[in-house]
Length: 265
Image (cartoon, rainbow, N blue to C red; front, side):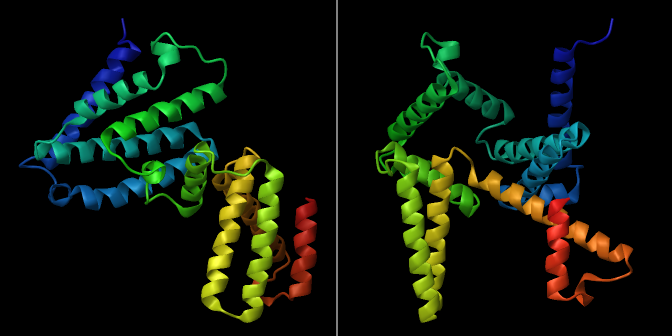
């Protein structure tokens, strides 16, 4: 009789942990033995981005491979802290398990949740209560400073909105976006570079809130638009190459015409 899936999971996870220990051991890899949490954070971030790309592609084999890369880096960083006597991979797993149990009282407790919206609201309430017990600070403290600016703007806006500091509806945000656009145009006319940058940032921040009210994530929307542009641009390059031409040698008017043709499919 073959090994069950549960047994395989335990065996392979244990094997990965032992591999990391070997790499960091006395007879391990010189490169791995030189690493620190700070140096590994760069590689971990790269691997996360590669995982996101794989998820976007929808290829299960690529996703499995990239998940493995991320998992390796997580166990590696945990090992670095274990060596200093702080915590190990078991502590990490135990901590996140307890946290998820606390934040799902409708599953592991006696509370009820009728829909995903209720779950999300309760999640943030529990999270804020946890943070407030640890320190007295701002509602915005839970938003990491290192996340991409567009995502950080979205999260900060969410946190502020939960305190009641928000527009009443999307029409109000749209009006604010129009105001910011006018201020940006004025800065352009005055040719003040510092003001131009500030006003453009205000436009982006306001548009993030437009997305929030429209129940879409700006990061996802922008990624989709980038992908659409990239696909169309590559198609233009391909069409020109098939006629023996390079995109650099084509006039702007011809490029505009070709772009419209590509858009029509």
